[in-house]
Length: 73
Image (cartoon, rainbow, N blue to C red; front, top):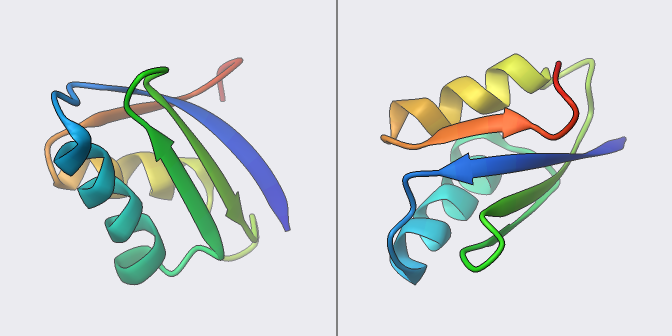
């Protein structure tokens, strides 16, 4: 397992953050995700052999937000 930090844009309220968090944990199946509206950051714990950084970014994009890994890909 690894923990990856993402910058998340286009969030406007706590419901946005909750939707992203739920999508990552429930739909994508990562082991843990914490999305913080104030800092516009997501901390995602995942198995890189199962869920790549690109797949996480794509899952966030499918629901209308943008996630980019901190420090690039």
